[in-house]
Amino acid sequence: MLDKVTPPETAERAEAEEAESADRGSAPKQGFVRRIWPRRLTSRIVLLNLLGLIVLVSGILYFNQFRQGLIDARVQSLTTQAQIIAAAVAGSATVDTGSIVIDPDSLADTNDEALPDSDQMPSLDFPIDPEAAGPVLKRLLANTTVRARIIDKDGNLVVDSRFLYSRGDIVQSDLPPLSGERDGFSLRALWNRFVTWTFSYDYPRQIEYGIDNGKDFLEVAAALKGAKVAIVRLNDRGQIIVVVAVPIQRFRAVLGALVLSTTGGEIDNVLRAERQVVLMTFGFVALVAILLSVLLASTIALPLRKLAAAAERVRRGINKRVEIPDFSSRGDEIGDLSGAVRDMTNALYNRIAAIEAFAADVSHELKNPLTSLRSAVETLAYAKTPEQRERLVEIVNHDVKRLDRLITDISDASRLDAELARGEAQAFDLSQLLESIVSFANDTRKDGQAEVEFDLAKPPPGMDRARAYTVMGHDSRLGQVVRNLIDNARSFTGPGTRLQLRVRRVGSDVEFRVDDSGPGIPPDNLQRVFERFYTDRPEGSFGSNSGLGLSISRQIVDAHKGQIWAENRYGKTGESGGKPVLGARFTVRIPAAPHA
Image 1 (cartoon, helix red, strand yellow):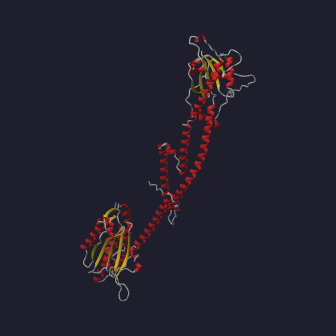
Image 2: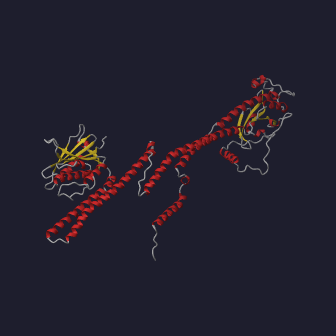
Image 3: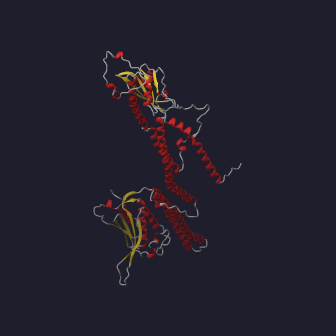
C-alpha cells in the first residue's frame, strides 16, 4: 500500500487544528479568572478601573456610618420628646375633670417637688386616666409621625396614639396587595431585592404590643422600673424603627411607661436617598472612568497594535522593505519601544543585506581559484613536457591552498558575530596580551620576515599598568586583530626592517598601533582596505591572502565599541617640497574598563 503524502499547506492546517483542539480541551483546566479575563488591553484597563471604583463605592455603602448617625440622632430626639410627654402625662394623672391643666413649673422638674412622708406613700395612688392622657398625646404629637403608647404599671395598654381621632379626621392606611399581584421581574423589583439582600439588617423584629402583655417587653419592663431604654427594631416590612421607653413618674412614683416609636421607612427613606446620590455619583464617575480608560488604552493599545502589525508584515515580507511606525516623538515607553523595534528592524535588514553581499563576494572569490584550478586540471592532460606538468601541478597546489585559506577565513568571518554575541566579556590587561603576541611572533618568524618591536608607554599619573591598560572584551578575538595587523604589515615590509607595535593610554581609551616600512596605502584606499576580499599586494604575492583579515579585524573592533583606521606615515619635507611616505599605520582604540 502506498503511503499518503500530505501537502505542506494541509499539514500546517492540520497542526493548527490540533493545537486549537488541544487548547479547547485544556481550557476547562484553566482557572475561572483566567478564562473570563479579557484578552484585549482596552477591555482590561476599563475593567480594572471599574473594579477599583466598584470596590470603593461598595465600601462606602457598606461601611457608611450615616445610618448609625441617623439612628443616634433619632434616639436622642425621641428621648427628649418622651421625657416631655411623660411629664405632661404624669401631671394630668392627678386631674379628675374633663380639662387638662399642666403646670409649667411642674414640667420643668417633676423630681424636685416636695415628697410626702414615706408613711403616707402607700396611701397615694395616681392612676392614669385615658380620657385625660389621650388629648395630651394628641396635642403634643400633632404634625409628627411618632406613635405613642401609654402602659400602666400592671402592663396594660392604656392609650395608643394610632387610635386617637378627632371629629373630621381622615384615616389613611395602605391597602394589602391584590391576590395574585407580584413584583415580577422588573428592574425596580430586582433592584429592591438586591438592596434588601445587600443591606439587610440584623436588628430584632418588632412584635406588636398586646392589651395586657406590656411587661413581656424588655423596654417596658425597664421603664416600669424607672429606667430609660432605646431599642432599634425592624417592622414586618424590614424597615428600621426606633423605640424609646421612659417611665411616667409623679413624686418618684412610677405610674406607668411611655413608649414612643418612629414610623417604618422614616430612616430607610433617608438612607435610600443617600444611596441613590452615591450610586448616581458612581454612575457619572464610572462613565468618566470608562471614557478616560478608552482614551488611555487608545494611546497604548493602538500604537502597540500598529507595531505588531508592522512586525508581522516584516515576518511575512519577502521582496520589499517594511517601514516600522515611528512613535519616538511621544517620549514615553511606547516611543522607546518604537525606536527599539525600528533599530532592530533596520539592523535585521542590514544584516540580511550584508549576508547577501557576503554570499555574493564569497561566490565571486571562490570562482577565481576554482576557474584557475579547472583550467590547470584540463590543461594537465595536454602537457607534453615534465616542466609543463610540474608548472600545472604547482598551480593546482597554489589554488588548493588558496581555497583552503578562503574557506577557513570565510568560516571564521561567518561565525564571528555569533561567538561575540554568545561570549561573555571579561576584563583583562591588553598590554600583557600584546606583549605576549609580539614575543610569540618574533620567536616563530621565518627567514626574511620583519621583527616586531614592542613599545609600551608609561601609564598616566596616578595609574598603574594594570589599571591603565585593562579593557572589557574577548582576549582571543582582540589577539586575532593584532595578529592580522602584524601579518598584514609583514606582507608589505621587506627583509631587514622592523615593525613597531606601540601601546598607550589616550583619555578613556587604550590605543595600540602597528607601523610598517612598506610603500604605504593610496589615499583613496584608506577605507577600502577594510572591505571584504579587497587586496592590493605587491607582485608575486597574489593569492597568498584572502582579503578578509582587515575586514574581520574591523568587525571585531566594532563589536568591542572601538575604532580602527588606517593612515600613512610621512617623513620630513624634501628638497622637492613633498613629504616621503615612510610606511602605513593601523591604529586601534578600545574603551578602557571602568574602575571603582
